[in-house]
Image (tube, rainbow, N blue to C red; front, side, top):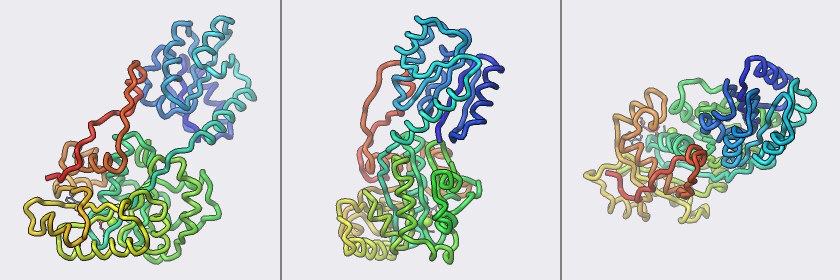
Length: 400
Ligand SMILES: Nc1ncnc2c1ncn2[C@@H]1O[C@H](COP(=O)(O)OP(=O)(O)OP(=O)(O)O)[C@@H](O)[C@H]1O
Ligand SMILES: [Mg+2]
């Protein structure tokens, strides 16, 4: 799937390019804007997610190429195609120097256009290798907050850290993660996908996930314990082999089940977050889960204890938690009933309705703990517009 941004200065040219794209068998998403090359900085955010920029600007002059050069220089995978009536040699040379790779003339040759699209699609496939860092969330007992944390962390990575994120709901009992992110009913669940695993390819996968945010896809939970029993670790292995390198982060909500399927997710995980609360039954269950994970050979260094709904004055204090579980909590998420309830009831992420709440901020700190931010500010106008928003990494400390 390639993302195309078309900047055209007339209806007629927009129609011609759209007709060629419609006839193409390269899978694409088109965003079309009426405008000129010199206005490119206005589309900086979109250009960041664009694979192919098509500029069909009839009034293009050499001076406008600076805007194209800036865009190409700051969007690492961007290919730029210029469509013009008759380019003089000096303009053609200047365009090439600016980084334009394809210059076509009107009327566009359909074969030439199709070849260029194939080229961009091929380049994307070979360069789209992402980090595919895997983080799992599990709890020993229901209601700990695993789903709320996993979903909102996924959203925080996608929206605030500009990471491509896949959230996979592996909870085999409730499978409610997608309900916390969108009111749309998911087209398919993970159980549906696994039931047709022989059909799995990029297009089928894309049709099964919910696109919750430009950067965040959610594979909904089975939502049916009977269907869930049919899901196999080999299915998950096949799925991850296909999609892992298309995402920066893959997050699993495992719920409370530890079975071969969950073990496959845990085997792939760089971080395993165990969620517990400050109650004796929760701590018992948390301890059991930590012991089981330890016995299964997962190293203590990748396991992180998260205490959710933390309250400073609660009867079970930090010392009691540490004594009961044998580990220091890696992070404390405060109890924030108002924000949590609002988000859960409306089926929207905390960042969108309670951005300044203590819980949302704490989730941001957790994101920075699990994946520390690297600061690489860029000075130019495009650099500033295109750079992911930098946030100060807060000290990891109890949030209360
Ligand atoms: N930090 C918090 N402050 C206040 N309420 C919270 C907090 N975290 C979670 N909750 C609330 O607790 C309830 C359970 O949360 P959630 O569904 O995330 O837990 P879970 O561990 O996934 O449970 P399940 O066993 O159903 O999978 C939800 O109603 C949620 O709104
Ligand atoms: Mg849950």
